[in-house]
Every structure is written in structure tokens, then in C-alpha cells.
Length: 167
Image (cartoon, rainbow, N blue to C red; front, side, top):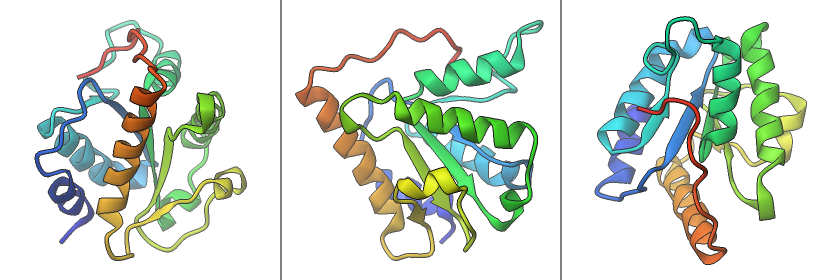
């Protein structure tokens, strides 16, 4: 079973109302990212994507960064192809890391997914990645979502009013 199908099956009938996920990937992982975004949307989860969330004339870079800070979760995809990626992907990895650091009370925001064996950027090694080759890996990402939602409910943390366009 592929990664997206595994996560979809693990989600099952669970609902995460108004959950916003930003999928971060290198261009080498575009297909996987689009499949993941489509799957999350089928489960009622809002996702930001550059093709549908940007308006003509908007500043792509600012909108991406704004969406990452607004997101409930940033799912960062890592593969051998992403290892050599530079430019915008590398910059967005830094933004994602900074967004995680702003998370209050030790919450989960940034989830690194290893789709194959590869090295993580140094600062990402602080947070436990999800190795999709391990058994029950799809269930683990869902447990992260559940844990974070329960934590927010317990602390009465309300979702932020979105400024970015989430579909």
C-alpha cells in the first residue's frame, strides 16, 4: 500500500474540523504532495496549495509563509530527491522550522515524513521524524493530529482566523 493510501486508511472516519495542513515538498516530490493534498481534502481537511490558494497579483512567497504560520500542521516531505534541493524549498524549510518554534506550550506543528532513507537538515533532527517504512507509520501521524487536537482543547486554544486562502 502506498503512503497516501496508508494515511487515508488510518484517517478512516476521523474528523479534524477546520484543520489546516501545509504540505511542504521539493519539486522532486510534487506528485506525492498533490496526492497527499487531494487525500486530506477528501477527508475534510483544509490544505493550502500554490495553484488554488494564490490570487493573480499576489506575492507567492509571502502567501506561502503566511500559510505556514497559520497552518495547524506542516507536513514536510523528505526523500533522496529533496536532499539536493536548494532555493525556495530550502528557504521554506527554514520558515517551517521557525513556525514550529513559535508553537506555544510544546505543541506539534511540524511533522517530517521520510518517504525513503535520507538525512534530515540539522535543525530538523530535534523533532522525531515519521519514517514511512516503519510499521504503523500512518497511524502515528494520525495519533499526532489527535494528540495536538486534544492538547488544544484542554488548553482552550482557539484556531487563528485565517488570512491565507485554504481549500
